[in-house]
Image (cartoon, rainbow, N blue to C red; front, top):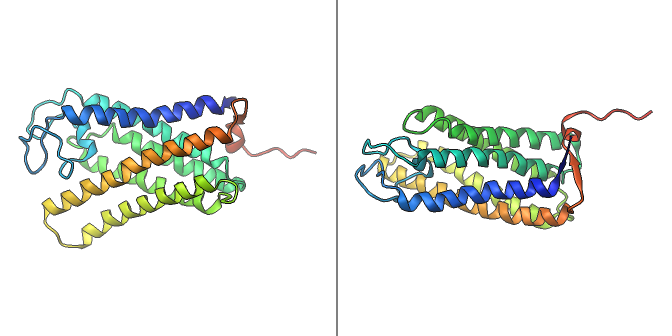
Length: 237
């Protein structure tokens, strides 16, 4: 099976755009409160996680009629994350590291997709676990990309990926440092919600720029056989 780059790049671009669009639509109509004030009638940027949009019930106990839209959007972007690393792996010469990038990209996409199956108000522990798998796998795949990409040929993508790597490292460090530093729950909540948005929104924006560059690299009539990344090459004799 051969997959046309242009169509897949456009689809991946769509997965990023639709998530951003759903966030912009759902935040203004969110009325579900937050852990500090369950009766708050608006989304508070330093008290609400983005995943609060996907809670089946608001903090005040009333049903959230829009939760399914956020979670469907999150499932779609999980597919997009896999395709994101699938395309970027094509810029790597070493076959072994191509496969590693696709592997961790797939784990990351799976992790973010599974978040949608474990809303925070129903399965908080699993929600955090699969989200952590998605984040760590995204970091590892990006790290491999930064190390092995030819930065002289793909300079823009290299530097953009470095920025993404720094953002992810900041998020991972913040998540672990707050466990060590003794701070009150409200301050902890504010740090985590703000750091989430500091990472997520630039990530989406940078990914869009990267895909604009990929469109220039992959011409409209250029094809990538997916199986070349997965199956070993046969020796020609």
